[in-house]
Each structure stands twice: as structure tokens, then as C-alpha cells.
Image (cartoon, rainbow, N blue to C red):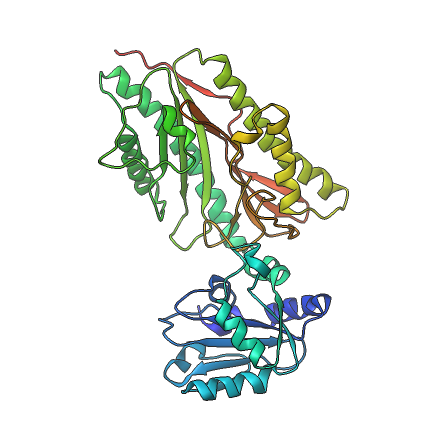
Length: 401
């Protein structure tokens, strides 16, 4: 799609509706070598970006693009004025002419407080400030414009979510069948099976799933490798974290499922699973309750709610990551995260945004449990995907045939 198809009159109206609330004169989008996915998403930029591009969307008046003369084709059909430059002196002059004296929003987060929002290099912020502009964060614009899913993206996500659920459950059954056939399954073997199932189902992913058994499940980002492939043994927990979309550019679905290799899990495994599940559900319930009552909700609040359940159960020190991440065309997107732990993300959740909810408890040297669902927020409230998330620990009869 072209810039014209992305930066539509409707999108411009949405942006201009927000800018006065931010007390900003405009939104300045910057792109260089794809550093800023927000600019790519809002502008629909294509082609290789080997030169700096600035696009200023004012609260009043026509948008302005400042593009290098050898890459001006990147803004073909731009709905506004196009200024070109070749030398750095020309670039600084054009920036000053467009921005001087203005208060502008950029993908900037003071002290890198929210890294997924802090997309513009510090040197570029300095360059813009040197042009005579004041720079503030574009956080609300990013949430409202860049992080929102389209209807087509929502439908693709729903389809992917149900397929991933089916594949996760079938993967656990495949492990059970391997045992019945007298074979010893491994982390890497299950990983390959999932990737083959994705291909059969028409799903696409940018990385293999996380398969972690036993004490490996206590590492939230365990990666099976050819040198460290591990047998999946009876009496252990098995964590399967898998993500994919209907295309590589689609909004992915991202889920984590848990099983126990045996018919009678130890009481501590069951206990930890139930605590994690309840923490997950508490975050969703709080969002639904507040939304129904007309209150705004932040990602930090939902992180606090989930974390409190785990802390009250005595496992607080073993919940070592945020509760959830934004999902847009990037699996870890630019919108609000459910986080008041790794960062303080106090951005409001708005209709159209999606995110994961995935609390976890990780007991070093023993086992870990994570339960992950996705949520998309509508005007009417939150929608959970998949439609039937995991409620109970899956127990696999893995006796040999």
C-alpha cells in the first residue's frame, strides 16, 4: 500500500483530534533503515530507507514531508507538501523552516521509560530540538493510530488464535503418542512438529516456538538447540509457547499452554498453575469491570492486579517479567504493555488495541508455569482469544505402549 492509502483524510482527522489534547502543534514521524515501526505503519512506507525521512502532520494545515532527493519516490502520492534535501545543511534548513517554534510529538520516551515507544535515536531528537522545536512523547498518538488493529487484522488474528489452540493441544497429544509408540520425544522434536503443523495450517511465524520441559520451563525464554536438545520425561511439566499469523505481516496470535507428563501432577505443580491462571483471569476481569463502569485503564494497573494475585500466594519473587505485551504488526508492538514491573507503562488502553496476558511463576532448578492468552479491546469491552483458553493443567498419560 502507498502513503496515500495509509495517510487517508480519515487518519488525518483522527490525528488532528488528538493533537490539541496533547497541546502539540503536530506529530513528527521519522524513519531511517526501518528504525521506527510506528512511522512505517502510519505512513505505509515501502522500499529501502537509506536516507533520513521526516513527515510532519500539523494540527492545522497541510502535512509536510522532508525527503532526500534520491529517495523522494518513497513519498509518491503524499497528501501534502514535499520538501527535498541533499546535503545535511539543506536538511537542517528545511527542518528549521517547518518546525521552529513548535511543540511536536515524536516516538520518544524520557529516560527510555518505555523502550517500545522510544523509537527515535537520541541524536535525531537533538537535531529536531536544534531546529527550534520542543519535543514531547507521542504515546497517545501511537496507541490511537499505530497500535490499533483493522477489522481485517482482527479477523486474521482470530483465525490464527483458534488454529494455534488446536495445534498446541494436538502437540501435547503427539507427545503422548510418541510415548505410546515407544519413542522418546524431545524439545526440539516437538518444536519441529509445531512448525510443520503451522505450515499445514497455513500459518506463518518469525521464529520457532518455545518448548521447555522440566527445569527448562523455569527459564521464560528457553531455546532448544541442536547441542542442548532435551528429552521430554515422565513426571515433568511441559511448557509450549507458540505464536503465528495468517501471514508474516499479519497481527499474530501468541499463546502459552502447560501440560504435565503423567496422570497425577504433584500438588505444588497444580498449585502454581492455578495461581498463574487466576492471575491471568484477574487482569482480564479488572479490565472488563472498569470498562463497563466507564473508567480508563492502563497497562500498569493490569500488571499490578495480576502480580498481586501471585504475590499473595507467596510467589511474587518468582514472577520476573511483565504481565503482557502489546501486539500489532509486530509481535511485541508499540502500544501499551501490561507492565508496572520492567517499566512503568501508564498509557491508557483504547478500543482497537490488542495485547497478551501472560503471568508466570518460575522456580529455578524445579519448574516454571506460564499461561498466555490474548485480548483485543472493543468499545463494548475486552475479547479474549482463543475463545476457549486453558483452564486446567493438561495431564498426559505417557505410559509406553
